[in-house]
Image (cartoon, rainbow, N blue to C red; front, top):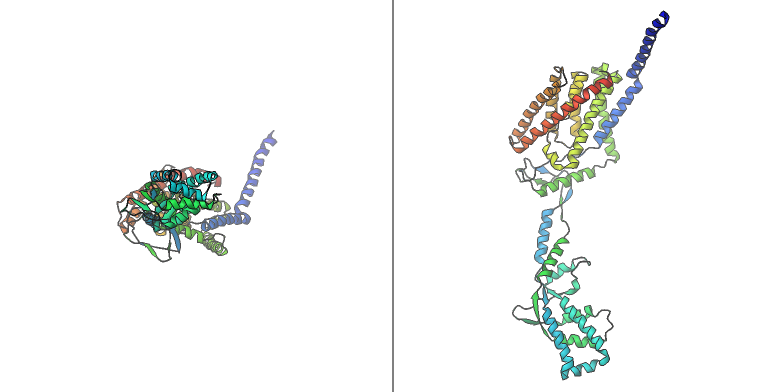
Length: 485
């Protein structure tokens, strides 16, 4: 029994020794180190390559704090120009007249009486047809009366607008005729060319003897007609013409100033900004070899600088795969957090992007690395991220750089006093106060202190700090457990 008991501690020591050797292998393996570096380089490349183009944001109705110059040739849908074109098209639509329907009915009735109750009419009718042709007469008379009721009369400019409409429009150009009745007379005789046009229109593809058609048309061509305004067709035509006016696209050349300092920002200006950003993104072909080469080269430069710094100043981290993995994890989490926030702001609502002018991402990495590793590596990571983010995010670089470095330094200096998890909120509270001073300084530069934008800046940075503190409190024990800190 004694031998068995004495062998158990020896077996436990042997297992611990084996685990220690395995842990030492994974912690010191060059292969593992290369894998960690490769994964970090891949994600850094993707972060730098798939970036949004930064375009200055303006608030609708506000006064522009600076002038804006086009970075590229672009075209944008000019709503103001389109509205002007529609107004001009509407003014081109003049008065539309039609023959009084009662007048058409009376004239048709008079014609029927003329050929049946007067000697002159009966004699003329007998010269062109016999009794058996009354069916053709009734058909021809009905077609002509319908054509007269459907006919509309207007001026030349209105007719030009009608001719420009697509063939499937509800108002047919064949029903319109360029003619304006005299306002001095109650009844007006229609010109001969109208009857020629009406003849071709209403009797097309009809099997009616030409003699009967000529007899009827000649009779009605001698009559005078009473006209009335057709307000319904005039309104319909005006709306129809305006609806078919294509959107006006205006071209802005690269280097052309399209927003002046102090100018009130309109919807037209915002449309220009969106079009310029879309053009910048379209011109930046992500599959172009030169674009890929540029992103690869930038990734290589940052990777070489990072490796050189860590190897020279932190050999304990460089030769420990566990610490390298921790450092890479924190940096990649920060990059992921920044990219997801950017996508949320850009994709969901462009107004959010105007409200969040000072996003705070760097303090997240600073407090994690300062707590889990050391302050020097946290400071290096803060500088590293502050340079990376303006290259890849759609943000204003100078304010972002200043506020993130300042808040990260405050976080790093205050982290040494942390004894409990809840003190993380105190640290971020101090960082928020520092960010308040930076925001106030920038607003004083722009002469917008204590304005609505100043208030929204304070609120957005406060939300960033609170959410970051909650995230840090949740991640710290997880990272400590995973990497055995």
